[in-house]
Length: 533
Ligand code: SGN
Ligand code: CA
View 1: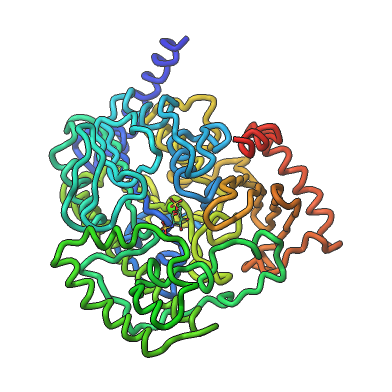
View 2: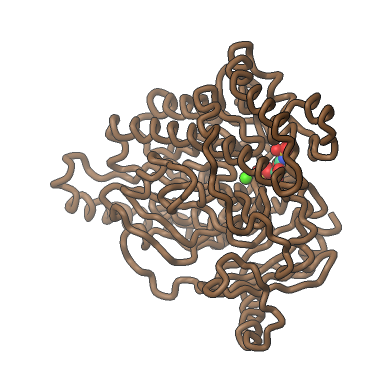
């Protein structure tokens, strides 16, 4: 049976090649080969901070090139808005409850079937460079060089097949150098390739590179309308979440005010709400890096001493500090994506390469007073997604269908002519990329978040989103439902769960949730097993 499949696939592949060769004869003299794939993923990059999505707070000219020369997805979502789970979903094409990585604590079982493994078996040369965050050793890659855990911004260590190595410099630059070097001389030139090029930036604690330090200093970033949300229209989970800029963003680790100054001015309660690596990160800097850093941050410390912001002014000050560092971290991602795109063009590789830009999930940039992610509300549920595929995907096109990170595996497999295993749960996006409108595309997406109790205290929940509505069930610790009409209330300020007007649609959506849970094999028993773990 397998052999037969292989034979049929082979025939299909040969005929697909002949077909596209004819089509492409005028464009190039070499026969069309299976496409290369460059998968660019950043960590916590909100769509609100990408100019292709209409950002009002920064410019990302290089990331925008991918959208301008390809397709921009306006309704791309994750299945579980947190780092490691998102990565496991992408690799396996299966929801968290089946791939086992429900939260950042779980270890990825790397014996599972993943799309890189299948591509490699089908003759692709595969590499994984940058943030991995799945604990177990990467499998399915001919070459890998990954950050341990969250990794560091300055002079980071990398895990490799030969052990740990420390590289001098700034993480986003280094990951890009590694990626370009692999393309130039690391890969097997006669094979199609998959390159997973995955950044740490712009993850908390948002340390900008030496050449972008202070680039937004003195520039006021527009505040989101909901910066001072009181959560009255939402449930207990939003009220109890610990990700408010005012209360939970640390003055030392996040805003980078020196502990002595924080103490001296009596701000101890805001010192370092979640003590982590910042001190460690700074200690990693060499003298030159430290000097460049101090040249910018010393004056920020002085400003803080002078202003002594309190109450709403403290929220505002921290928000500006947050945006300065977050957006500066993105600026070097953008420069480096530009370098990689330039190389792909100069080398001619982009003639037959699918280039994807996405993030492991969205992020709050002060909306609802928050930073971080996790919730099924739009800012963290949505993720940026754009795809360039020269000669196939129409430049400047946009897609408004509901798509998910669950769909990547099958998309890449189909593009490579490899049959996806039955157990994968996404849908290939290939028709969209080819300009076709598939019939019966999904009308709803399913979401399930698990990491609780944990940092940021976001309660467990699952839910469903259609084009217009969203229904969420917080089932642990509380038993609460929330319902939003995204057309009338795009900022999700008022849950309409108890509004009689919406009862018929809420009833329908409850049925839809059950259908989706059955379709994807999620259940109350599984929920209990993850709670009891
Ligand atoms: C760290 C961050 C959190 C973040 C988690 C998960 N704190 O704990 O803000 O939510 O990672 O992020 S920090 O002070 O250590 O930066 S994730 O991207 O790995 O999911
Ligand atoms: Ca993340």
